[in-house]
Image 1 (cartoon, rainbow, N blue to C red):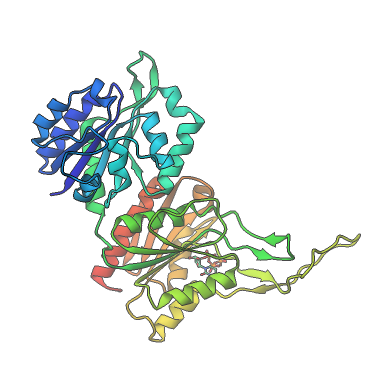
Image 2: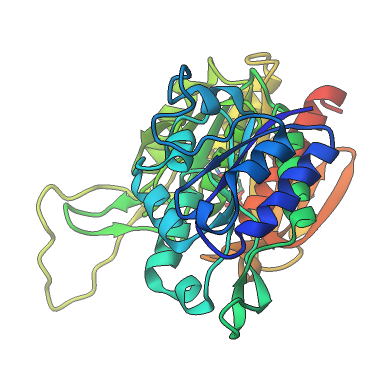
Length: 396
Ligand code: CTP
């Protein structure tokens, strides 16, 4: 059973945090509480101290005699419920001016946030931007849900029910540790192939899937190296980030990383071709057409597969993606064989490109496992489980 810290911030839904704390305790976890000053206007410190049987952290300077990092050190997981718009903004900005934020700032384990606020506050660009930042930082969310709000209005912003939050917390605890001790290298994003100093050939990969896998692998206890093409995402805290631009740079970075990798996930959309030459100076327009001769880039996944088949890196688990416009699973089976991978994640461009959700099938030598439409974070968590089970059953 886990040590869980519940951080309560100041919204009317704070009363539900008492039920959450009791529910987590009922499920066998040890629970401690940190509260902001405004949370104490909605629910009493004595109630939570009574329910948990331990002192509640209500002051920035902690429980007397305990350093301010103690609660973050003790907790396997922190649940912030309810998280107000203000708390979410401060968390995204890295502020630490109350006991909930201070504890979050030095958590050694994952953080689950359960937002609750008026629907217009939830919809505001600032909140949505802060949620994106926090997701990129590896923080998970449960809710909010749609329904009647304290103000009398109705809409998105209700705190999820305590049982739902407890379920989400337990799912996170269950998912951590699956890749514990493993070194996972993930490639993400597009590669850009330069024509001259200002022009390039590229593709529309956003990198979202690869970055979600990096977050899920981190949560599962792996040490993560993220080799990324140019994207507009922030790497989660705790990964080793290697930035690359072209397929050849990606190729070099992957082969450098192989020696220290137990798992390689090729989520990058690697350009299959590059211009034969790159002009040193900007190419000036002329009246005629511009023909560009393209040459093949190495197929990195296939090369790694071939190297492994020849006896190098025998312990490596090799995962590729197949982005198709039709017959994704059939084609993924072909790629699994041709590229000598252990697992191909098959998906359709229409379900995936630039979106936050996707629908995929995991294709291995032992079969196909279809995952229903889900967020890229949920798919990444499922992929981590699939990789963990491949490593325990061995390569078939
Ligand atoms: N990949 C790679 N190097 C390349 C191209 C692709 O390592 N030059 C990897 C991708 O990261 C992905 C997998 O190979 O994991 C599948 O990529 P995809 O472009 O779908 O496969 P191709 O073999 O290029 O198939 P197609 O025949 O559709 O071009």
